[in-house]
Length: 449
Image 1 (cartoon, helix red, strand yellow):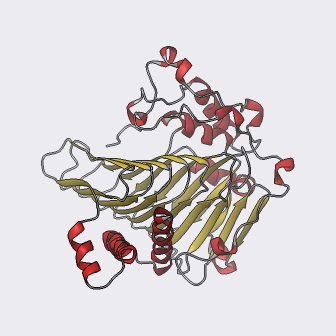
Image 2 (tube, helix red, strand yellow):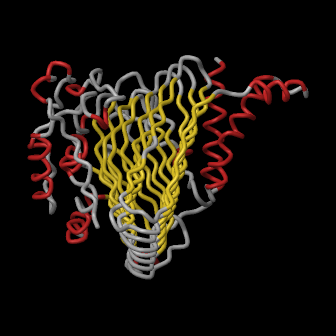
Image 3 (spheres, helix red, strand yellow):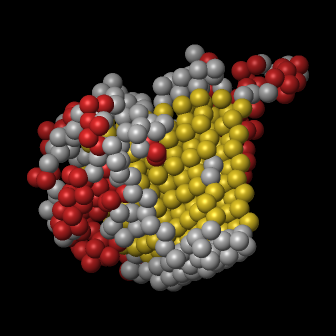
């Protein structure tokens, strides 16, 4: 049984126009020409009629976009490519292993793609969206808009229409890829709109580990990042998906992501969010086949004036499925985090096992964490639990460490690392854990200065 996608449309459009940010200056002329032109044009029609989200919409009531300079953003052009900083070498280091089976780097000035020739001979496709539309049009047509619909919101429609870059990954039936695949979306530039679309299909009985990072430099000028992630995990397939967001301090970031897991499929999804000025992200798992399982682990650490808003949903649509979600975050400065989670159990989806938890550590009196778990259960033979906490560093263990001669700053960092340890234990990749440890150290230094 399918649950309808969440459609985010306000019924108060005419009454709140004065409070909205300026309109984006994109037009139908910006729609890329290619094999998916009809899909994009249909999405444009939806984009044109959808209202801009506001605090009057339930999903957006804690994220105010009135200061978004929408009318400043423009799509990258050849003139914008001059003097943009190159992709940092540290960003290109594999997150999951010492080497990779393939890598795609997306930048405003072009794409760099490589794939192990042996994988290519086995039928694996791993390339950028533009190339895939030319070389594999039927595959793109079969994937785009099938899991995330343009009607789901203004930014979903925008990405469906104007995505100029993105990733297409297809792993054929029964293919097990030993070496991880990696992609990087590097998005520098003042007032540029970086719009992407990621399409992944791990076919029946296949297996792959895939990491993707969205990143940009810190800069005074603003930028826009918005995109869609559509992933299908086929029957008996396995996907380990590592997603990092390390955008610069003035990036506005919006995303709609959904992963569909079919019969006996298995998903491990790691989400790390430490960058951007403001992020609003919808991250969902649809368990559509019996025996499907999903494990989602989220890490975030905010400082300064950062605002991160994550909306997660675990949809159990058939019997005998399980999901396990744990998000942990720490906050410094005047930052704010919002996590809103929902476990949905469809009628007849018996023997569901669902768990979700969100834990927050507030390190500043000026920071704020909102944690809102939820359950919607329409079956009677299930096990679903949730939990949420917001707290500060305990004085007692801090005093204990200091009494043993450990300086206060070191003691505080030790306690923060201990707080995040349950997330670290869920992540089987040393490179990812190392990156998170580096973030903790950097954010703690910033908080002390």
